[in-house]
Length: 221
Image (cartoon, rainbow, N blue to C red; front, side):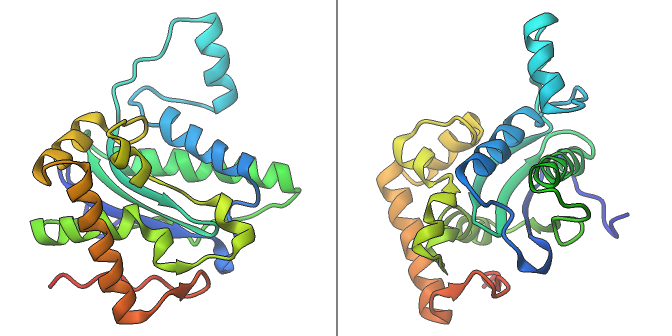
């Protein structure tokens, strides 16, 4: 149990990494599987597995897509991920993350003939209550791959929300949240400029960090 329950209609920075800092994505199919899970597990109605979900779409009525969370920003790196999520229903973030991490771990272990935990325990969460910190995290999360020194052979394992914001075309990011943010920043170009400034600020403070180093989150100042 979490010491403090996650509050509905509030925004949270959610993140986790592979156990022992190991890669959680080893090829493009892993990334695509995780992305599919992000989309399909984000619904109030229970989902047993992606295989059953695909079957139900063909043979039975389509499931309701009332979401558990609004995805505001995300970055998938080879050995860890970051999200900004808005909780839309009671325990929505917890349900979403349990399905996401549990389902992906089952897939990854079966594929790689392994057993045991894939992630470093439960996901980490931080309430984002200040507007300035929220804006700072938008750049930090959506461009997190630019903060790290990612080996060339692993750059194809990166997938982030910056592309959706650049093109004002929201597929994984909540359309409502994405359009609201672009309106606040007066368009995608200004938002991209803001995000690049956040990346520059972080890199000036700590340099470009290895994927094996823990992420020191931006301060709230």
